[in-house]
Length: 524
Image (cartoon, rainbow, N blue to C red; front, side, top):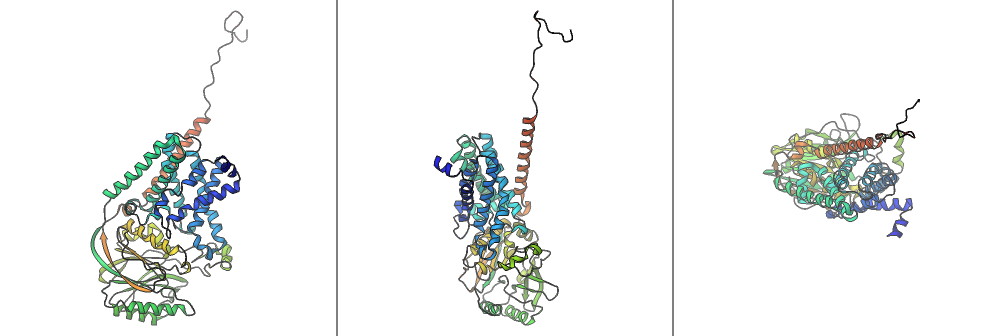
């Protein structure tokens, strides 16, 4: 043990170990999907940081751990971003530096029960503050939030309906802190056990008491996934394949047909022939078709990604323009400075334009749907607002063709389970090339996934639910609570520092006495 500690004395070695420890949670996400591993994956990093010789070194360890975490969960971006993925991980990894300092401050040395108990609340709150900052769309969005690793765990999905993915992240970090304390801090094992018991009690209470969606109907929705189409004129070939797959749905008694992101590569205003072909498919199948157009618009300047509803008479007028774009993939931040990224990676040659508002569409059979495009499904607030506006089914149109042979398609498909559980609304995740997936109003999987090797149309019998989940009603309350916890802790630390700096009363000095044992009288 002493030899390992001596080996870690090298700053570079210690930084490498911290980065590797920070990367461990990636195995809790799809494709490995070892959901249980999330509850111990942070323990090595926490134990390493608490043993840091100084607060500054602990901050560096946290930074390196954040770098490792971000690089691991976004590793599939390497072929597209090249060196930029390392730069992004370094910059955003700095968000973990204050968290690393907090770990040492609360758990370093031999903390008593008070500090151990505070760590169970303050450290998860600090992690939520990190996820809040990096969830900003301009910083890449909330991809791979720690709580989203629990997408297939029934009790966790119930908790998501109460506090969203934020609550899951908080509890996962709290369990990791408890395990780390049990393993390395003998003086605080009692509060660590109490934290584990409290987590189990909260999960059990949510399972029993949180309201369940009221299932009061069913709807049949078909997903058309054309699969990989290569070669020249791939846009036309893909459209022909989508036509062929859609015709197979005639007579299947479906209520809506959904195509994936960028399923139509031309604006329907410029290509009325394509609009007529889709309308003919709508008449043949007897339902509206939700397509996704990725093209320069004919009625306004710029390229948009838009969900467009087409009925038997052509486009119905319902249209949603994507609001949150993928940095570098769909626009380049500060293009005047970073425009050279197009020469070293697959960055956007021209920025897409943003939509201005979310849209709830009325389709045939009285069904109300809330469309999102691509990684917008990772944002909890977007699906929550659609549920508030009356959407009965959430739909995400996606295309992960660029990352076909990576973990990205599975990760993206799993996110929809959290959005469904949070809102109490079923969600359809329809892609061009897989993975396509459908989830019920409790986040449970409906039917089977369409994998990355599938080229087919699939019909899903989906339960509809109404009612309002606590998360839809109260929003991101775990984040607000976490910020209050951090503010209260900072205030208490500030007050403690003031008390330590305040000078104490001067010691009492008895008056000097003369040789006759009487008090001296100055001046005489």
